[in-house]
Image 1: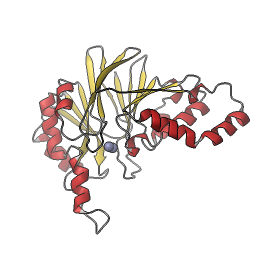
Image 2: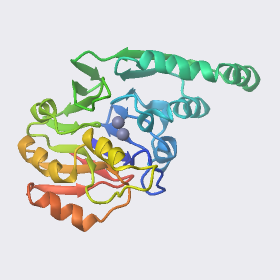
Image 3: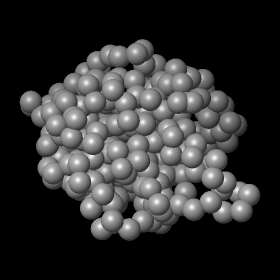
Length: 275
Ligand SMILES: [Zn+2]
Ligand SMILES: [Zn+2]
């Protein structure tokens, strides 16, 4: 099973760290997790065609994780995708997908009529919304989804990908959360988000100390992420969703090493890791 980091950034624009997106693949299956800004460009760079992605999973509906959904769909059509899209996401996903497709409806209909391509199946989007916990089988991948704590976002999820006795856990956006620590136990790879302490300062009235306090409060801080990985007994910790996207790497590594002594990787866009 392979994990490819397609975007390791956050809402703040950074040309090295695109918006949140990851791909898990086996020889048979390809599952995309989130579709942040620049996901289609990164897929192209990783030489993965959107024509044969089996499913898209959404951790939650924050814009940084879903902003390129339409770009993904339309570019898959332009790449001759002939099968429908399966999208799995939290409550509200159906409404979100419907609204996005509606916003572009006139433009799309004109294109379909004018460009005369052989299939319009790529625009057929089958949405399934998550319960509190569940399992999804996609070819030879067994995926578990479970709730994480990203309050005030009501519906936010983490995932376990299981294949041939290996487990990759994806935290999604979350503060330190018991449910994540329960489901991530003994993960071969724990891909976890992080808010890096001491890198952001308040700026006048735009980014107040309250802003910083609130943003930090629904993420996992660099002081806590090593503790979380240790409790999970993760074999390997891979960090992503860096807030902010530019930071002192050495300092971050040293902070986490205090709590977590197994292998740790500072994620980068297009990095491939095999479990
Ligand atoms: Zn996010
Ligand atoms: Zn979020």
